[in-house]
Image 1 (cartoon, rainbow, N blue to C red):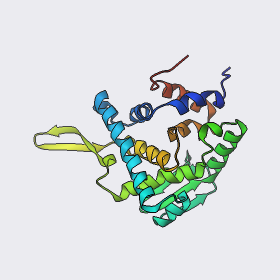
Image 2: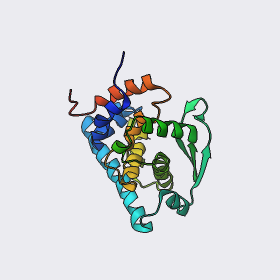
Image 3: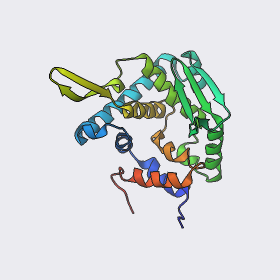
Length: 223
């Protein structure tokens, strides 16, 4: 019987660096094996920097606005749906071009309850989950409007003569969105922590497996 509770897992998760979380994110990208480990590390650094810089631009432009006010200022439409997601997939938030964010409130409520019941709010700086999700999707909104962002970088998958096929990496946008949200909400840990926390109440066994997978990317694994 597995005895460790989510509270026991949190110290390792919140102590992981941006680079470690970036390696985890890259491992989930369909084309990550096309890139050398050295190039992956470089791209992780640049994606994190991209996210932080975009957050700083907003802070310089609009000041210390509440995330809801900031989203409204930027013309985003936020809808709340009383469900666990769409098409039988558990979903917490979703950006839809050009300016729509949907929050799935049953999942958010379940995660908030989990945090309260396990007394892990302090480890997470008592972050508001809804605001965190909005901040993450806000980056994707910015990304959709700026073709020059680093997250739009493409790599060559194959060549035939002078013709070459390029593809982007999904993970770059996700890494940058996490860094963006952390910068905007002044978090001292990566929001990637919520990859484990948010779905825990829906599928605890799967989250435990994910946690063990994540630990592969932690340089100092400890005992």
